[in-house]
Length: 587
Image (cartoon, rainbow, N blue to C red):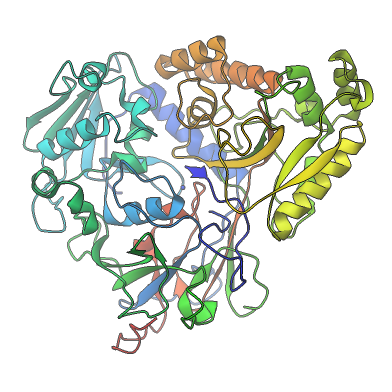
């Protein structure tokens, strides 16, 4: 999940817009030993690496009993909602809505274990190529129709449709017949089969170690075949899923006069509790998702704490709200170096910049990032195979000076200035630019600001041929090193924003997909990470963290290591919930 919005939230300022600071069951199942070890190590590693707080009362307090009722209001502060299609979603806000409306065959629990969802159990063949799932008998869509194996076949075949799931389709290309289907040489995917009404089978061309993790990510949701065939893309205007909450309506101006719009779409959605959810009805009656960037000047906007019940930001005004945080996310923020622009296409120059940048000073330059763990590599703590790289790739001025001289730019002589993007009057990007300039001045490299009013991609014409440091971020879609190293650096990955290409890295990434030995697999990823860091297409900065302020009567609010889209809204309840009235519905 890419963090495309890279400025801090600007609540109520003239410049605020859709680009705020962004933002991861009691049944048995059968898993081969190697995969079971991987799952257990994932959970144990993160349990040791991260500390989480929730709004559940402490053991010393008199435990309150969950109370049914009430509406929880969650803010949308980054990119606008543009789709409710799991195959097309890219923003954290869209993914969060998808997590509430739909379910997949499997899911992640709060410790990132893979647990049953629509499938009550599964079996994996001894060669690791065939996965057979039995669906829950009580799994039903919001319209009351049962979930069938044909719905599963249709949903996964849809993910392989050319032009539809371009961000994540590569994770499904090892299904037997996937490439033939994408190339138009077959009308169906041979490796997807409905054995009977409640038995679904996937066959892979090789052992595919991250299969269960991929099936637990947001794009792998099961959709109703009959409804989609009847309605086409109009289905997603009022989607039907299987999740704990069901779509009610888009919130328009008649309900909320100050609701922001984006390209004609109101940026507010109400989801009602699904009374027939297989885990039981949520305690909340509904969840409202509502954009909190400024409405047009002609409309009167209410104060933030009257619009929502939580917010991710260090807002000092709400002293009576409860702080909920996680010390570490499965995330990476980083600078993309201008590898295509000479002389920064020389890996020695890029490594020199990496060694010169004091990441701790950069993070502490702003209150938004002060105290955030600095990155020592690409793969964050809590991911299986994490290996600290600090000693080899940390702040080292001696190495930086030596590398610049070896590249032919002693003391930075002849090196064109680096440009750092600054968003208008945004204090966070200004603080970053000032810190980068101070660090680079110590090796003789000039730095100047490049002022922009919107988020830019690396291939944007405005910066394509300029030596620009481009800030970017990534949050795990599933807890596996592949979801960082492949997604960000495989030459064919659509999320490879740096343009990095190394045939040996590609070969090893493809090899790791089928490696069933836990140790060998981690050794491969460690080699890959070292190769990428040596080539230095990016400068890893930090592993991020998530901090929320929550209204005092909110209970069961707990953060996921994969970011706020994976907050389990069906676990939230309100002490002394207020009954809804026509007036209270007017946000």
